Length: 291
Image 1 (cartoon, one colour):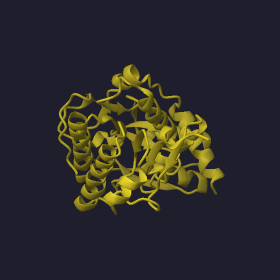
Image 2 (cartoon, helix red, strand yellow; image 1 turned 180 degrees about the vertical axis):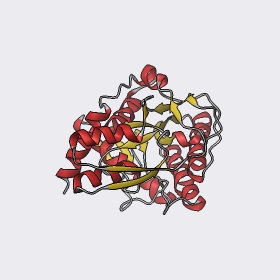
Image 3 (spheres, helix red, strand yellow; image 1 turned 120 degrees about the vertical axis):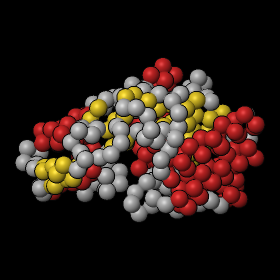
């Protein structure tokens, strides 16, 4: 039986990305403890310290996502920023030397010129969620410099896959196609997303944990490929030919970006395994198997 000291402590194991990271760790035969919202409140500092005793690393995925229901300053600050601070304090007290933080490309904001954003570009988040994630990164860097806790902050772009929040455009399209319903979307047809399949994102987490070069780094986890709604429509329609999508043009204000992934490729040796087509096929299989 593996000792607890060999284990990884995973927060947010019941979340969208967390379930796939847990599967990846399990498939690799790694020893870990999966912590979910039901058994650990990351706002309870004492509980966090007690739960994380004896571990060698933490993968911190627990957080407050940005939806119309959850997008407020207090929730984001308390869970994403102060929750991360509690995890870091637990690492300091329990002498856990390594943490992987799930961050977001929303830390960059919307002031950049259209193009590809690198990790070295200025971070001016324009919403509460991005601000809370940037503060969590700052806490990680400070704890690294003062207490030697080696961190890697992964700035995830638009992750898609089964289990993502149903309010997003992609699950709306998938669900309509599977259910044989016509869908009307009000979107800007010229806008695009930089999308990564969730299984590839989970692989990036594992690669970060193993990489010494990733210690002390912030890394974009992205595809670097423009994906428009029409591209998604084309893929879904190839699987469900009867799927009908009507787009009502709604012009969006602001720039759209790709996110440079050279650091992920060079440091992590990250190479997405899923094309857009392969990702949607797996997504749909998981969705239909789950019914």
